[in-house]
Image (cartoon, rainbow, N blue to C red; front, side, top):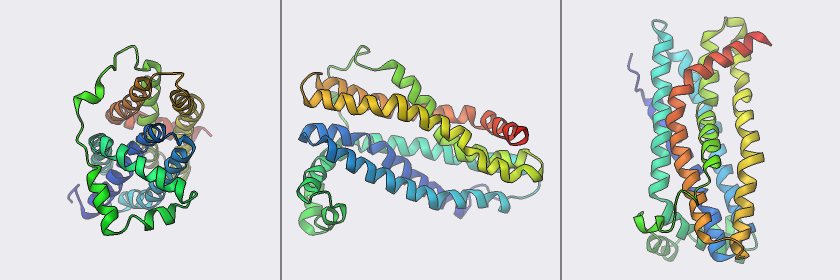
Length: 271
């Protein structure tokens, strides 16, 4: 039986879109700072996250179904190969998001202004862009990544602790569901459902770190830049830190995928 099936390709496409959107969402704060509408930018950020999570809701059951369709011979190795494909696709999604980062800073800047004019109506904002003039404006926003964007960014402006934290968070989020699904194969059948429901012990830790130590710093930094209390270069450095550490985190996920699965399996039997 082939590892790369039609279903694997379909899930990979979902993952590519999800990860790209999550990566591009980091550019909303830069866009909001540029147009001085940070609260509206956070609203747009929340909308993008919602789209990403909705896509995840479709993708996760499909990923779980692969276990039922896997051959009984060398089932663990077969599933591991398929899941590692998904982790690799996640890395590619981050890279695609990084390539589109300058373009979407411009697009989001326009979108934030339009969202403000429409008084927060996302549907109205989108509907006014689905026409020839709207698409033409989007085409004028296309920018290729340039080394000039890194101007003035040094090791001193890069938040190193934030980089390390986001590597951990990104790795855990990348393999949270996959490790739990894999763990269901490692435990006795009676504990399989417990393992499937235990992804929270991984994703929960990542969410706590994200909520307490990462997101607040980003919001405060954006506010300080708008008030001219901090140089804009620090906000650029933050964005590079987040997308760069997210990419490294997806690579690190390849290393922790199996150990995390055994941890979930142990937890499922221990409780």
